[in-house]
Image (cartoon, rainbow, N blue to C red):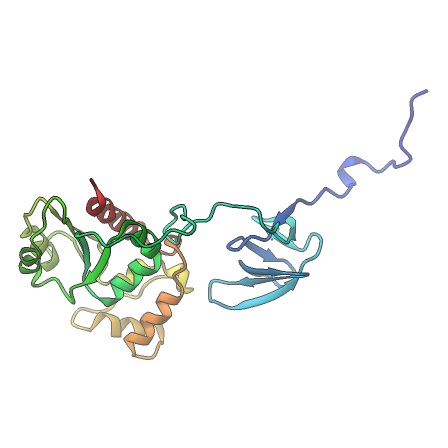
Amino acid sequence: MRQYSADLTPPWKKPQPVPEVAAEPGLVVEEPGTGFCGAVIRCEAGTVTLEDRFGKHRVFPLRARGFLLEGRAVTLVRPAAGLPRPTRTASGSVAVPGARARVARAGRIYVEGRHDAELVEKVWGDDLRVEGVVVEYLEGVDDLPSVVEDFSPGPDARLGVLVDHLVPGSKEWRVAESVTSEHALVVGHPYIDVWEAVKPSSLGIDAWPRVPRGQDWKTGVCRALGWPENTGAAWQHILSRVRSYKDLEPQLLGRVEELIDFVTAP
């Protein structure tokens, strides 16, 4: 005779299995009870620590069906210890475990100012050390032609330059056009300052404010956002919100990658 299950609950009423997901650092989940959404930064016995986009930390217990991953319920579990797993640098490149910094190349990458250099270091620093590329800053591009001439770029010492506000007709555009060496590459992004190359969403704002002509742009930004008019402190706040290439605009990402390729080409 045909055997029937004692459980007559229709399949669509039965609880669906919940997948277990390893709480790897960087995994973004939501705790539905509080609505807190953040990336995993630590997983210990019985707890997981999340960090939201504002840098706030919250600790939650590991429990069945305790989190949402892309809108679906999951159970977070501690990652298996000792298993090799691929990791990536802040730029998105595959990390090279145990790699030592290469002896510096003769070639260089120049950026306009200190803030540009700090941002490039934070996102591409690991890659640059592996490739042996040093980044220096110019404190402006007005003297770029003479800087390039003094550097004397050649086949084994290429020079890449990253310029802010490189749009047709701008002062920066005219300066860049005056650099003619085939062993020097000048590229840039359209933003008034590298601050703008950080995505507003990474800072928890809707958009970068418009600053009227004639005002110092950075000071105007601080004033419009209600920040103390201390541009150094403001930059440190902005830089602290940059964790990887995902926090930067594509117009900057592409140009930095282009410069690294140019300087390291055989």
